[in-house]
Amino acid sequence: MNCTIAGCPGQYEPRRVLHTVRPAGRVVVIDHVPADVCSVCGDVLLAPETVRRIEELLENLGQPDRTVPLFEYA
Image (cartoon, rainbow, N blue to C red; front, side, top):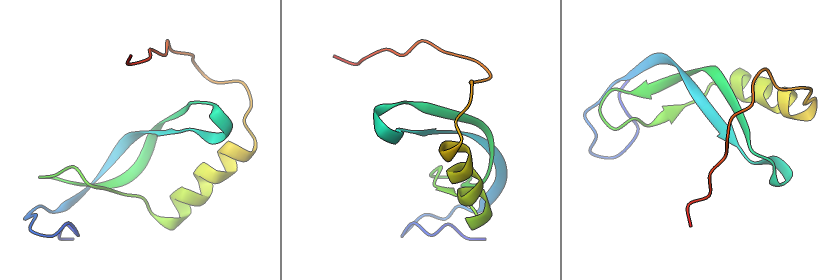
């Protein structure tokens, strides 16, 4: 599929991405999220079922699989 960004000649390719969200002041990073990513500009498209699954994960946050340091850009 052609990229939806005006003027970008790229094509979307299926990949797994790292997705970061900030629900209620927390930082949540979800790894291995299926997405279509433009080969030129890097635009990311998530399928509706992927978005629903992310929303489910965020509603039922348990213990994380891993933790990482978080640094502030000051």
